[in-house]
Figure 1: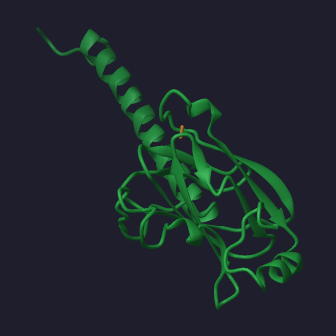
Figure 2 (figure 1 turned 180 degrees about the vertical axis):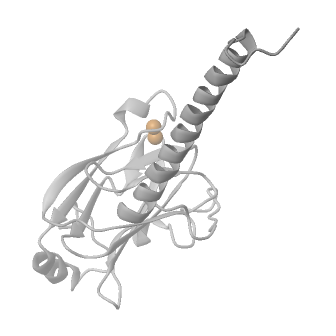
Length: 188
Ligand code: CUA
């Protein structure tokens, strides 16, 4: 067979189509990398900086997640740390209260199975895995009330597992927090 430069063979057509699809799949990968970088840098959605553990069998007996230590606490630097536990089928505290325009660190874990932890209209979207502490940093610009659904299937009562978060005025929060060690909506 002689080589004819003007003659398009089936193999050439196949090679051209393969190059096109290779370019498209590289484009999709590049787009996903840009999206992940945007979410990480702009929306502050980061992987855990380190692994911290908490034994789900002894959460209620001792340590950071004992019931009296759950809720919102003001740190010496003026930021607020929220500690919470998820269990079938509720969160403790069921209603979280935080100040507006303040750096918030949420530390939460699960007492039984994997639960979801999401606060609507925020960067808070993580999972509560038994044995591990999930940490997420956030900030709420203005006072508002938001829902906090468990968004990970965790059993028969999953769809009824909802919490709430109340973002209140910073001065009001600090005044209320002055004579309480831990804050929840109930204790307001
Ligand atoms: Cu907890 Cu779904």
